[in-house]
Length: 478
Image (cartoon, rainbow, N blue to C red; front, side, top):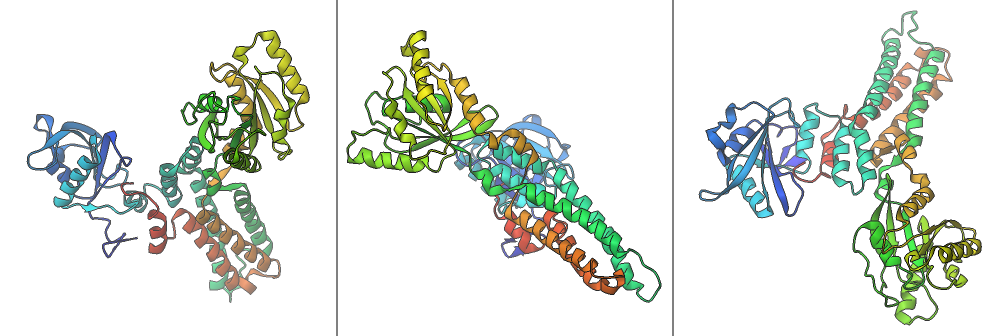
C-alpha cells in the first residue's frame, strides 16, 4: 500500500487521523489519531474540563471537555487516551468522541490535519497493529471481516479467526516444519560426512502427518464467500392468504404492504429473520392463482422461478376459508424442495374447526411438506412453533456445523493449497530415495516453499504488494 508515494512501512511513524465510526449520521461519532504526535494534536483541538493537560495523562483515560471546530465554534466531546504499547496500533492513540454529524467529524479531521496529522489510508490503523505485533495477518483479516459482516453468523465466523486459535495451530506447523527443514539442510552442509540427520522413512512420517493436518483444515474450511449468503425461505400461496402479514410478523419489519385487496404484493421483497440462533432470508412475493391479469401473471412467473432456487418453501394457506386442495398446485414445479405448510388465520376459527381443517391439510399435503404449523400472523399465535420448524428444515446450516467449520478467504485457502502441494512433492521425493542426502537440495527447496506459504498465511512472510492487497479492502478509519 502506498501513501502519497511513500511505502506503508516507511510511513509507520506518521501521525494519522480518520473518522473511525460508521458512515452517516449517529448519536456519537469518533475521530481516531495514531502516531507519535497523536495526543499532542488532540490537545490542540480539545480543551478538557478542569484544565486537565492531555499530554500528562496516562493511557486508558476518558476525559470530558470541548472540541474546537474552528477558532470560534466548539462542541461537547470526550477524549479517550491510549499509550504505546498498550493501544490498538501499539502507538500513542487518541479518540475524540463527539456529535455524530458527518460535517462536524469532517471539521475535526481537518483540524487534526492542519495540526500535522495525515489522513489515514484504508486499513492503515489495523496495518499498524499488524506491523506492531498486536495481531497476525489472520487476525487482521478477521477485523475486515467483522466490519463487513451483515449477519450474526458472519460475525461469529470472524470472531473465531480473531481469537487466534487457528493462527497458533499454523505457527506450530511452521515450527515443526522448520525443524525438519533444518535437518535436511544439515545433510547438505555435511554431505561429505558419514552422518544421516534424518532417514527417508522418518521424513515421510513427519511430513505425512503434517500434510494430513493441513489437508484436514482445507477440507473442513468453508469459503468466506459462502458466509455472505443466508439460507432462503420463500413465502408462497394464494393471494390474501396472509403472506405479507406473516413476513412482517417474523421479521419485525414493515417490509411488505398488508391489505385485504388481492394481489397487493407484486414484487419479491426480502428481510432477514432470526430463527433461534440461526438466521435466514425470508422472501415474500405475489400470490399464485389462475384468474390474474398480465402483470400479475408475470409476477407469479417470477415467484415460481424463485421457488426453484430457494432452500425452503413456506406454503401459506388461509385456514379460515373452506379447504381448497388446489392451493397445493404451486408446489408441483418444486417437488424436491422441502416445504413448511403454514395454516394461517387460526384466530378466526374455533378450536374444533381449526383442528379439523388442519388435519385435512396434513392428509392432503404433498410429500415435500415436512411439517404443518397453525398460526395467526396478526396476533402472533404459533409463530415460535413456526420459527422452530423453519430452523429445523435449515439444519444443514446449524450452529454445530458452524462451530466445527473454519471460514477462510480465497487468499488463505490458496496459501494452504500451496503448502499442501509442496509437502506432497517432498513426500513423493522421499519415497524414491535410499538416503536423504541423495535428494537433499530438492527436498529443502520444497520444504522452504511450504514454509513460505504457511508464513504468508499468518504474515510471517510478507511483501508490500501483499499488504497493499489486504489492507486496501478495509474502510478508512479501521
